[in-house]
Amino acid sequence: MSEHKENTPKAWSGGDKPFNASYGKLMMWFFLITDALTFSGFLAAYGWSRFKYPEIWPNPEDVFSHFPFLEGDHPLLFVALMTFILIMSSVTMVLAVNYGHKMQKNKVILWLALTIVGGSIFLLSQAWEWGHFIHGDRGGIDTKTESVVHLAKDNELSSIYDMMGVDSYDGNEYEFTVNQIITSLEENPEYHIRKANREFLTNEQSISYLNENATEVILGANLTRNEYGHRLFADYFYFITGFHGFHVFSGVILLIIILINVIKGTYERRGHYEMVEKVGLYWHFVDLVWVFVFTFFYLV
Amino acid sequence: MGNHSNSNWWIWKVFWILLIVTAVEVALGIIKPPFMMEVYFGTKLINHIFIILTLIKAAYIVMEFMHLGQEKKGLKLVILLPALILIPYMLFILLTEGLYASIMI
Image (cartoon, rainbow over all chains, first blue to last red; front, side, top):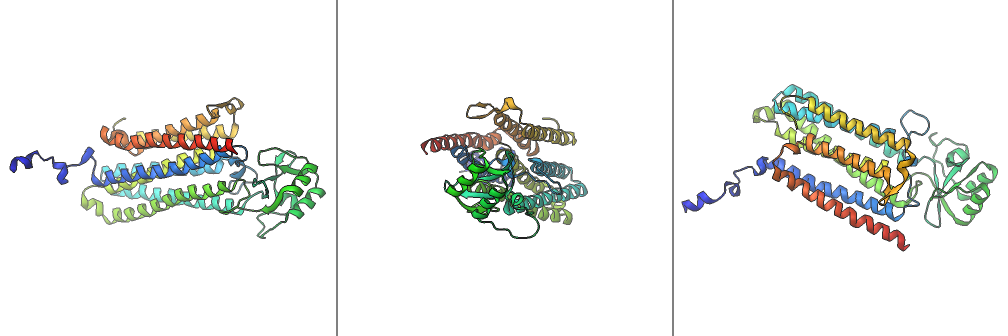
């Protein structure tokens, strides 16, 4: 009996640390693996749809082209700023973990607080981005072929608001009918249509195309239809960036909880700051996911 | 990769690498050099470059910021192998099916 006890590895009775990592860290890693697979499932599904509709899938740079307080089109700049904010908050998180190893309570408090600030700024930026996405920008016209066409001027993408002579952000809720668009196209020959496959029609072609195919004018985006193009595009946008934003939000909550614990001295009494390290793992993972979302949603 | 416990310089090194790689991605995305818009192996050359740069960023985040580089070899394999096997497999299945789906219409 005693011999049997000696031969039984200690790990089976819960004594040892497998891989020299604590229980908490291992479980965080295992959770992150499953979460990584969930996100790659989302992004792979997005890729599937893009490969299925290569001709008519919306061009990200036509959709995400705004920057707060700046006029005109600035594709990529705002998401690049969001990426920078998240990388920066990852750096402050590593610094907090590092000072945790050295048991320097005040520096952990400083860098954790800055990480919370970074995460919050990211969330606000995302809210701004969603607001813009939902409100819409150029407007689109849905057709019987289920692809959305856009207005153009001199072979460059334009907007329905421009042609109708109104400002989309003047506080009014605008609604236009297909007939209004066609009448306006007849009055303004410099405007014409860009089809979903980026083909430009002349003004006369546009009018007969709309007479034949147009079903309704779409302003803005929701889960069932959006002005940017294929219906799945907005769905993926909401699901992928929303799921990621929810992770950032949970991360900020976790960071606030451990910040309170650090201030109260919980980890000082415990003798180690491993909890900061575990939440740090989660926080870096959120940054990691954003690196992929940035590439596959905005760049590619 | 360096002595992680005594100094902070490696954190800023990784920060600069991530920042520069992101800046290169954004610059390429805005400039769109014409020779990179040619299609190789199913997508444009520029997309292959974006994906490689993204994987470099991901490697730095996981290995340095998440300290996976300093963990035991067994733990590294347990974490990396499922992702490195299952994700490319899923991508392969879904992207080829996406291609067929577009051909069938």
